[in-house]
View 1 (spheres, rainbow, N blue to C red):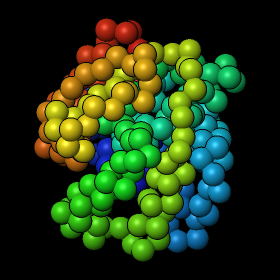
View 2 (view 1 turned 30 degrees about the vertical axis):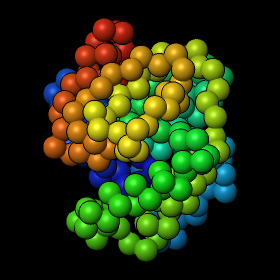
View 3 (view 1 turned 60 degrees about the vertical axis):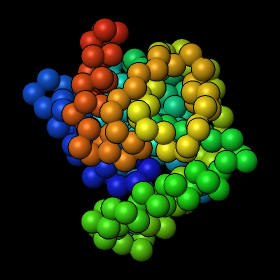
Amino acid sequence: MPLAGAYTYARFASGFRGSRTVDVLATPGFLDGEPLAESGEVLAQVQTERVLARTGDDPFVLVGYSSGGLLALAMAALLSERGAPVRSVALLDTYLPPPDRMDEFVTALMRGMTDRRDVVRGLTGTGLSAMAWNCDLFARWSAAPLPVPVLSVRADVPLLAGDGSAPVVAEADIRTTDGDHYTLMEEHASRTAALVAEWLTEAGHRVV
């Protein structure tokens, strides 16, 4: 569940090659002519329908990186209400910073993006606008209780210095991986994928 481009998951997904099926669901609005969702609820509903169309009756796990984890949680709630076989949710360095640190959080995110000129260069003006819009949809979001287990993988180097914020989901199983908010999906992506794979094996889940 990327709120930026689907490319974000490329290295992470390769860690499951030959063992599990990984389907990256692109977020609407990144291509010219694609409409943006008017709210987080609408985006979650749209993506929920797409997941149901792709998975059918097969059990699956939702994975979301950064703010995409908030979308995954919102979708998991909708899917559970509809009786879909969602087995769990894995959050990859997903934050919901307190209001007094939101500006600092956004600044840190933008600094990381600017340092990755190859990534920014690959995004059009439409894509950059969509990323900012989609992330803002969940700026004041709060997680509802879920009937499925949640894994929260946190980067060893926090995005915000001195960050001691509670997990987005209080009952989440927390694991720590190497790297920072960006490198856990870049040079440390294989380790991040291995942590998720280990947890899924322990829990007896299957990624679709």
